[in-house]
Amino acid sequence: MDPVIIEDGKFKYIESSPGKPVLMLLHGLLGALSNFRFIIDKFSTDYNVVTPILPIMEMPLKSLGLKGLVKYIEEFVEYKSFSDLHVMGNSLGGHLAQLYTLNNPSIVKSLILTGSSGLFENAMGNTFPKRGDYEFIKKKAELVFYDPKTATPELVDEVYNTVNDRSKAIRVVVTAKSAVRNNLENIIHNISAPTLLVWGRQDDITPP
Image (cartoon, rainbow, N blue to C red; front, side, top):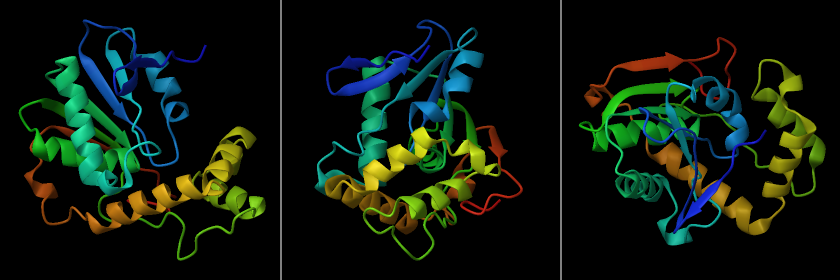
Protein backbone atom coordinates (compact mmCIF):
# COMPACT_ATOMS: atom_id res chain seq x y z
CA MET A 1 0.00 0.00 0.00
CA ASP A 2 1.31 3.45 -0.90
CA PRO A 3 2.27 5.72 2.02
CA VAL A 4 -0.23 8.42 2.96
CA ILE A 5 0.89 11.98 2.27
CA ILE A 6 0.08 14.31 5.17
CA GLU A 7 -0.73 17.95 4.36
CA ASP A 8 -0.04 20.24 7.31
CA GLY A 9 0.08 23.97 6.60
CA LYS A 10 2.63 24.56 3.86
CA PHE A 11 4.23 21.16 4.40
CA LYS A 12 3.51 17.85 2.68
CA TYR A 13 5.21 14.77 4.06
CA ILE A 14 5.08 11.11 4.98
CA GLU A 15 5.55 10.05 8.60
CA SER A 16 5.54 6.39 9.55
CA SER A 17 5.98 6.02 13.31
CA PRO A 18 5.81 9.18 15.48
CA GLY A 19 7.72 8.87 18.73
CA LYS A 20 10.52 6.69 17.35
CA PRO A 21 14.01 7.88 16.29
CA VAL A 22 13.72 9.97 13.13
CA LEU A 23 15.10 8.85 9.76
CA MET A 24 14.49 11.74 7.35
CA LEU A 25 14.60 10.88 3.65
CA LEU A 26 15.28 13.57 1.03
CA HIS A 27 14.28 12.71 -2.54
CA GLY A 28 15.88 13.74 -5.82
CA LEU A 29 14.93 16.22 -8.52
CA LEU A 30 12.63 13.98 -10.57
CA GLY A 31 11.79 11.39 -7.96
CA ALA A 32 9.79 11.30 -4.79
CA LEU A 33 8.13 8.51 -2.86
CA SER A 34 8.91 5.74 -5.33
CA ASN A 35 12.62 6.22 -4.55
CA PHE A 36 12.12 5.27 -0.93
CA ARG A 37 9.14 2.91 -0.78
CA PHE A 38 11.30 -0.09 0.15
CA ILE A 39 13.17 1.89 2.82
CA ILE A 40 9.93 3.17 4.34
CA ASP A 41 8.57 -0.38 4.54
CA LYS A 42 11.83 -1.83 5.86
CA PHE A 43 12.70 0.68 8.56
CA SER A 44 9.36 2.01 9.82
CA THR A 45 9.26 -0.71 12.49
CA ASP A 46 12.25 0.79 14.30
CA TYR A 47 12.30 4.38 13.02
CA ASN A 48 9.94 7.23 12.37
CA VAL A 49 10.65 7.40 8.65
CA VAL A 50 9.83 10.92 7.51
CA THR A 51 9.90 12.15 3.92
CA PRO A 52 9.20 15.84 3.32
CA ILE A 53 7.90 16.44 -0.21
CA LEU A 54 10.23 19.10 -1.58
CA PRO A 55 8.24 21.96 -3.18
CA ILE A 56 10.34 22.11 -6.34
CA MET A 57 7.24 22.51 -8.52
CA GLU A 58 5.45 24.95 -6.18
CA MET A 59 8.12 27.21 -4.68
CA PRO A 60 8.34 30.77 -6.11
CA LEU A 61 11.01 30.83 -8.81
CA LYS A 62 12.94 33.60 -7.05
CA SER A 63 13.36 31.30 -4.05
CA LEU A 64 13.93 28.07 -5.99
CA GLY A 65 17.37 26.54 -5.69
CA LEU A 66 19.39 24.63 -3.16
CA LYS A 67 19.48 27.51 -0.68
CA GLY A 68 15.68 27.85 -0.73
CA LEU A 69 15.15 24.09 -0.47
CA VAL A 70 17.52 23.76 2.50
CA LYS A 71 15.66 26.60 4.21
CA TYR A 72 12.40 24.72 3.60
CA ILE A 73 13.87 21.56 5.17
CA GLU A 74 15.09 23.56 8.16
CA GLU A 75 11.64 25.08 8.63
CA PHE A 76 10.06 21.63 8.37
CA VAL A 77 12.39 20.11 10.98
CA GLU A 78 11.76 23.04 13.32
CA TYR A 79 8.00 22.78 12.77
CA LYS A 80 8.09 19.08 13.66
CA SER A 81 10.43 19.71 16.63
CA PHE A 82 12.79 16.97 15.44
CA SER A 83 16.26 16.45 16.92
CA ASP A 84 18.98 13.79 16.66
CA LEU A 85 18.14 13.16 13.01
CA HIS A 86 19.42 10.38 10.81
CA VAL A 87 19.37 12.06 7.38
CA MET A 88 19.38 10.11 4.12
CA GLY A 89 19.46 11.71 0.67
CA ASN A 90 19.38 10.36 -2.86
CA SER A 91 20.81 12.30 -5.83
CA LEU A 92 19.77 15.96 -5.37
CA GLY A 93 18.39 14.95 -1.97
CA GLY A 94 21.90 13.88 -0.99
CA HIS A 95 23.21 17.29 -1.99
CA LEU A 96 20.55 18.91 0.20
CA ALA A 97 21.33 16.48 3.03
CA GLN A 98 24.97 17.57 2.98
CA LEU A 99 24.07 21.26 3.01
CA TYR A 100 21.55 20.70 5.80
CA THR A 101 24.16 18.81 7.83
CA LEU A 102 26.73 21.57 7.32
CA ASN A 103 24.20 24.16 8.50
CA ASN A 104 22.87 22.09 11.41
CA PRO A 105 25.66 19.87 12.77
CA SER A 106 24.18 19.67 16.26
CA ILE A 107 20.92 18.14 14.97
CA VAL A 108 22.26 15.51 12.56
CA LYS A 109 23.21 12.25 14.26
CA SER A 110 24.23 10.45 11.06
CA LEU A 111 24.23 11.00 7.30
CA ILE A 112 23.53 8.49 4.52
CA LEU A 113 24.18 9.46 0.89
CA THR A 114 23.09 7.33 -2.08
CA GLY A 115 24.26 8.44 -5.50
CA SER A 116 24.48 11.97 -4.16
CA SER A 117 25.22 15.06 -6.20
CA GLY A 118 27.44 17.77 -4.78
CA LEU A 119 30.77 17.14 -6.47
CA PHE A 120 30.00 16.07 -10.05
CA GLU A 121 26.79 15.57 -11.99
CA ASN A 122 26.08 14.44 -15.54
CA ALA A 123 22.31 14.07 -15.47
CA MET A 124 21.38 15.03 -19.03
CA GLY A 125 24.78 15.38 -20.60
CA ASN A 126 24.97 18.56 -22.66
CA THR A 127 21.44 18.34 -24.03
CA PHE A 128 17.98 18.94 -22.66
CA PRO A 129 15.24 16.73 -24.11
CA LYS A 130 13.13 18.03 -26.94
CA ARG A 131 9.52 18.55 -26.00
CA GLY A 132 7.51 15.53 -27.05
CA ASP A 133 10.54 13.26 -27.55
CA TYR A 134 9.38 10.26 -25.52
CA GLU A 135 12.12 7.90 -26.74
CA PHE A 136 14.83 10.36 -25.70
CA ILE A 137 13.31 10.57 -22.22
CA LYS A 138 13.01 6.80 -22.03
CA LYS A 139 16.67 6.28 -22.95
CA LYS A 140 17.86 8.93 -20.48
CA ALA A 141 15.74 7.42 -17.72
CA GLU A 142 17.19 3.97 -18.44
CA LEU A 143 20.74 5.36 -18.20
CA VAL A 144 20.10 6.28 -14.58
CA PHE A 145 19.85 2.61 -13.60
CA TYR A 146 22.20 -0.35 -13.93
CA ASP A 147 19.21 -2.44 -15.03
CA PRO A 148 17.26 -0.44 -17.66
CA LYS A 149 14.08 -2.32 -16.70
CA THR A 150 14.08 -0.36 -13.44
CA ALA A 151 12.92 2.63 -15.49
CA THR A 152 9.29 1.52 -15.48
CA PRO A 153 6.72 2.99 -17.89
CA GLU A 154 5.21 4.78 -14.87
CA LEU A 155 8.53 6.44 -14.05
CA VAL A 156 9.23 7.36 -17.69
CA ASP A 157 5.74 8.84 -18.02
CA GLU A 158 6.30 10.94 -14.89
CA VAL A 159 9.57 12.37 -16.23
CA TYR A 160 8.09 12.85 -19.71
CA ASN A 161 5.12 14.78 -18.35
CA THR A 162 7.40 16.96 -16.24
CA VAL A 163 9.73 18.05 -19.04
CA ASN A 164 6.80 18.65 -21.40
CA ASP A 165 5.16 21.03 -18.95
CA ARG A 166 6.94 24.35 -19.63
CA SER A 167 6.61 25.60 -16.05
CA LYS A 168 7.89 22.34 -14.57
CA ALA A 169 10.70 22.07 -17.12
CA ILE A 170 11.93 25.55 -16.19
CA ARG A 171 11.95 24.54 -12.52
CA VAL A 172 13.93 21.41 -13.28
CA VAL A 173 16.54 23.46 -15.16
CA VAL A 174 16.73 26.14 -12.43
CA THR A 175 17.18 23.53 -9.71
CA ALA A 176 19.72 21.49 -11.69
CA LYS A 177 21.80 24.59 -12.45
CA SER A 178 21.70 25.55 -8.78
CA ALA A 179 23.09 22.12 -7.91
CA VAL A 180 25.94 22.48 -10.42
CA ARG A 181 26.82 25.93 -9.02
CA ASN A 182 26.82 24.64 -5.43
CA ASN A 183 29.85 22.40 -5.60
CA LEU A 184 30.81 21.21 -2.12
CA GLU A 185 34.42 20.21 -2.79
CA ASN A 186 35.90 22.93 -0.58
CA ILE A 187 33.54 22.54 2.40
CA ILE A 188 32.53 18.88 2.48
CA HIS A 189 35.40 18.12 4.89
CA ASN A 190 33.54 20.14 7.54
CA ILE A 191 30.90 17.41 7.89
CA SER A 192 31.66 15.65 11.18
CA ALA A 193 28.60 13.39 11.46
CA PRO A 194 29.16 9.64 10.90
CA THR A 195 28.51 9.16 7.18
CA LEU A 196 27.64 6.17 4.99
CA LEU A 197 28.31 6.55 1.26
CA VAL A 198 26.43 4.26 -1.12
CA TRP A 199 27.27 4.28 -4.83
CA GLY A 200 26.89 1.92 -7.74
CA ARG A 201 30.07 0.93 -9.57
CA GLN A 202 28.33 1.65 -12.90
CA ASP A 203 26.89 5.03 -11.84
CA ASP A 204 27.50 7.46 -14.73
CA ILE A 205 25.24 10.22 -13.38
CA THR A 206 27.00 10.91 -10.08
CA PRO A 207 30.23 8.88 -10.48
CA PRO A 208 31.75 7.46 -7.28
